[in-house]
Length: 439
Ligand SMILES: [Zn+2]
Image (cartoon, rainbow, N blue to C red):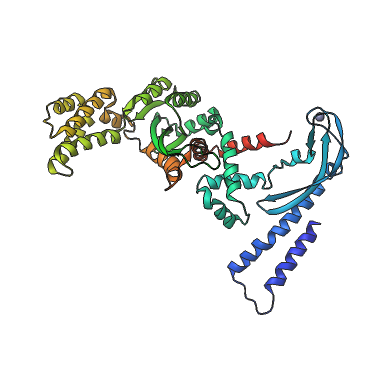
């Protein structure tokens, strides 16, 4: 039967290509294949299933998956499907258990048929697409690239459903996988550094509006997150990223879950963060042996700010003061810098306030400023790692102009993007698919 379908397809191709006076180009040929193959694949699908599962298609009785009672076939029920290969239909027996008021088709379980028209292969790719491009217009792009027409509504809905199944347990690689990644960078002459970098990024959010209700006023909320990676002798191996719009306590719980999957004994650990106290509290609790390093770029930003206010932007004096201050900090001369700040004669009240804040910041983080020692030991001093992860995970998708996120959808987006980045998207999707399969 499939051979017959091939013949039909070839006949159609020949007819089109050799039509009088036609000289199709590669592009036109490709287009012709795209258009005609859908019908061919659809027919193949049906034929293959009918041959392979003939027994299930002829079934007259089947046990109820809920109570086990034998049920008689009620009727044949046709299921319209769309896969990445195009549309197809499947006529299969349908049973109904009166005890449980439950209708079922045993074949659906075997074939893992989705209740939706678009099957799981389409759902998986559509969700992957929605993680990269805006929902509006995403379906158009998807249809254009795959020849499978899907709606914005389908893309958005499926994305949110997959997002519900994406929990931290699956988004973060397993203990076994993490151990494997650690083994990759081990070297007899180098003890790898496990870098734990935490940060917050602001995401534009709005409250979920009810039907016919005006959209609520937007607000910026902090997505708290971390990136964990290994610094090998000559390369960086990513371990895990996790970002969520959430409070400090949840952040701590999430970090501790990841920490429990990492065997910390054979590693040196570097903790990187800006000055935020909440962040240090949790990093130290989860990685007690970690070397605390105040992110150099955040620190430098504070120095630049005071230099600018006190001496004027880009003046010679400002540049000199910033340079010498950063050099002193590089050599751990924190007290020296504080002493100098205390003796500074503020230019105005704004400068005075910033100087006061900088002194507090340096005093708070005194023990975390030792950049020269970090460099010698092979520790990173700046969280370029998390900055780029933040950019990749949050900003590129979350901070599009005009995009305001409902917290739940925003968090689903962050979880799925983290899964893609962590290499766990397949696992997350499996979980979603298995959660929706018939009994
Ligand atoms: Zn039953």
